[in-house]
Image 1 (cartoon, rainbow, N blue to C red):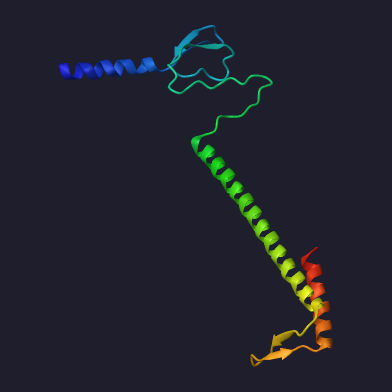
Image 2 (image 1 turned 135 degrees about the vertical axis):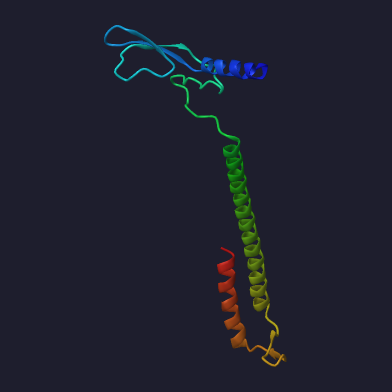
Length: 156
């Protein structure tokens, strides 16, 4: 019997956790219940409320920005997104720097080639079988025109 006394006390305490509502019906009779009043009742009040288990919801202040606090997952996603964007910007800057460096090298090579053709002298190139061939004056002039076009395109 003593074993069941604790259980009985626990069962009696459970209704104490619920809200208690008070309302007056159309006939003027006062009602008390743990259930909310019907929708037809115009005036009702809650007599006892349970303690809040969750943190209270902040009341928005007029004129203040209404941004809900971000969860840890949202913050992590935003951090990763910012980091990815920063990495993309850095990669683009590095790619642009490499392209500018390559353009500078190509300009320098083309300029040196133009200077070599303008200096004159005997100019050679390798033939299809790997032997050296000397360019004629006509071929040198053609190669000079081509080298100037290449230098103009790279050195803009």
